[in-house]
Length: 314
Image 1: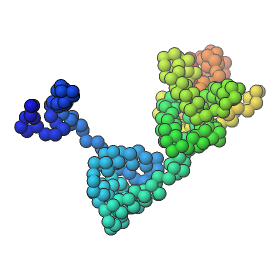
Image 2: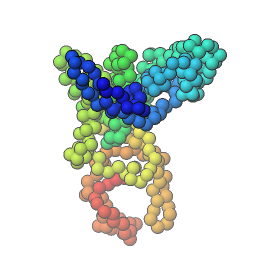
Image 3: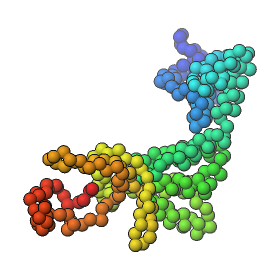
Image 4: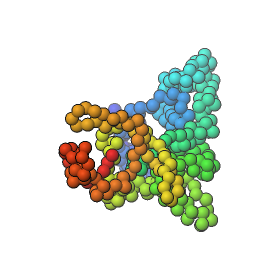
């Protein structure tokens, strides 16, 4: 008969023995690994963080404790701000009652599905337009959309996700060329007898970012220069209506304020508001040179400084 060695503890033995039809089966078991301590982010009352916090607290704290009074103390410790203020008085109640009351308060005040869904959607709907070529901003939008998708589907709030009004407001934040591309994708979906859904838009944007990020997408990008970023000028994303022979058109642009200073006498001209575009419709032939200046008597002695390249940026 095999006996465990002295010092072996249940659950940590290196070998287990089992009788099966008169035979002894041996199973090697490894000792439980020592895992790093899981850090739980404190809950401040933000509805968007409610379910993530509750799951982390349940798995890491509540499931490992038997006494409800201890659970309540840990719950208070891992709450802060409005969330902690809402449940502090629960310590005056008996153990089980106090813990259950605290959990009910958190669910009622910060965990209502409608409030959570609205908070996630506001993150997507509120914000300025994304400028053309700003791939990082598109990536941030996609991450928010994926998080929103996961959260609302868990709460069975897919109606808010696929609401056409919400989808249109998200699309309105996109650069003009992506709006046009999405219109074509949406038209194909409508022609198939279906309605464009949130998942369709996420897939479209993910594909668009993938194209813009690869080497061929960078080469194909119309924005070769971004003088506002090069000069470190503060800017604000906006949209402007441009009228042409083809009629008015809405352009994604950046509003900037800067000053132009002469090279020698320090004279400066303040530009209170200018708008950036992807490229200026100016050819090399339009750039003035010495021959052109000599045609004007008051400019004949001006020697314009030469700059590298032949692209007009300002």
